[in-house]
Image (cartoon, rainbow, N blue to C red):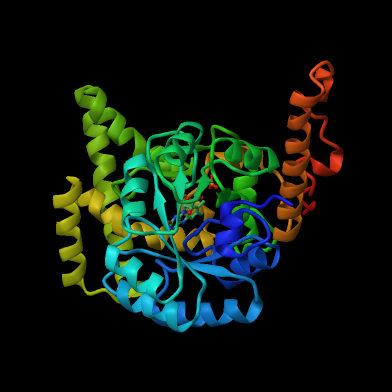
Length: 395
Ligand SMILES: Cc1cc2nc3c(=O)[nH]c(=O)nc-3n(C[C@H](O)[C@H](O)[C@H](O)COP(=O)(O)O)c2cc1C
């Protein structure tokens, strides 16, 4: 058994957290993770209040183990979401981006454990000062929105800076990673892409196959999608929007600029079409969309085309993750997808990670006790402990 400050804080068997993923981590994945001894989390930012309420009830019906809800503190209805979490007796709440002190206080007063997310040391320090119980620090390798510091540098830095348990994220997939995270001073790991690629994840099979096929160079970080660095699978659509910025930055010639202008105009038309679809799906009024767009432009300096693209992001992500529309080309992904080629269940995955981590810790201890026998390290990992233990079923 590996017990850490995180397993104690959350009352879970293993120091393994399933990171929140919009349209992916609903009741099924969250409950499967919690039932396997980790902490499952519902991603609520892409849910309405009513959807969140029923997701909490469904998850509680599927597991008696602790689980969490991930929310955005900047959502206009964040206080109501906090009330739902408290009323539903959800044990853990995590914040997708910066938390807010009054939300942390309300959750803590009700006995809910709070976790902040950080991509940089100063964010972790600020959240710790506001009273969160733990922090998930995510390095550049991670899927979705990322900071600029790689996991191997961020985790030791954050662990040294704050007194609360640090959960390491960005690029984890096996027991060796867990041992490394513990060595850097973390109290556990969180994984997104690895949990997306399980048989318990609800993502359509065609989408999972795209991730399984991607190599280590199969993802890219782009700010062209929603104005902030976002790691996604490298697809034709992503390759199409990325060069626009590259051309602008390198001062490309007049021909290239004209071509880029034509492409951008086409992109704006497509963006406008999807923005209309988003408005219909979300029920947000045009007036509210324009208001949000104006404030995005002011805060991030995005062009209107980019603002439209940002408005599309939820539509495109949903189309891939829920409807299996790989052709639209937008799928958040960690770099680690390049090292994953199987679809275990959450239980198989977590058991394999824990066995491998325990074997790794034992083998490392021999480095000190039997210094004359250096053959003990690195340990030869028995076949059943290797990360790729669950072959992808042939189709
Ligand atoms: C498909 C996908 C969707 C994601 N959606 C969200 C989200 O809605 N909110 C959020 O805070 N993070 C989101 N993330 C980021 C994860 O919470 C986590 O930080 C990341 O997956 C960790 O890196 P890893 O994929 O290398 O494990 C998403 C990641 C992926 C892969």
